[in-house]
Image (cartoon, rainbow, N blue to C red; front, side, top):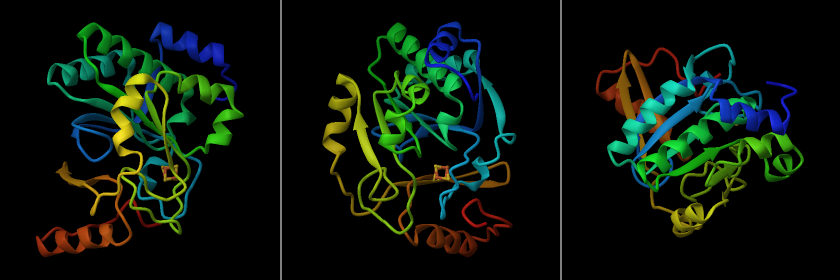
Length: 235
Ligand code: SF4
């Protein structure tokens, strides 16, 4: 996607001709944003934060392709079920800026059609100053109601909801984003919500664990007779 202009991102979004490379799509997601949500994890990340729990999303050639048309069908079904929002995570969504712009545009078109107030939240490892200096990334995020920014820094733990380290910021960008996320800007739950799903021989942890949480989940799985051959949070 290198070299795509801001205008190009907008044009791609309007045509819907772009596909997204994804690691995973899941619903309902309740641990990454308010309410019950559709989660889309983009594949590919070059930021390589030490301690990243999602190393399986780093390789840009792994995962699978999700067309915008197929995404729209899934999102439409999620809206019909009454889901509260869409969370885009990764991986690094901004390493596919045209795809991100197209996906957010399609999500917005569907929610308007459905008369829904579901919000669109995007996680990015880019820092706010990096976004401000990059018009392609800024254009790709145009459709987001809220964005959680910043690298994961293992040495800066936080209790702030939905954030993995204290440097990460929850930025609201629209009236809906402000309405939906204002109560959570400084919310510090006693424990983070984590979802653990077992599917097709894989155990997936959804959410933002605190230090020690993944080890506890591993030990609990062992007690239940589940042996993990490899994990996405260890090199
Ligand atoms: S924490 Fe996020 S931004 Fe950092 S390496 Fe992992 S997927 Fe990439």
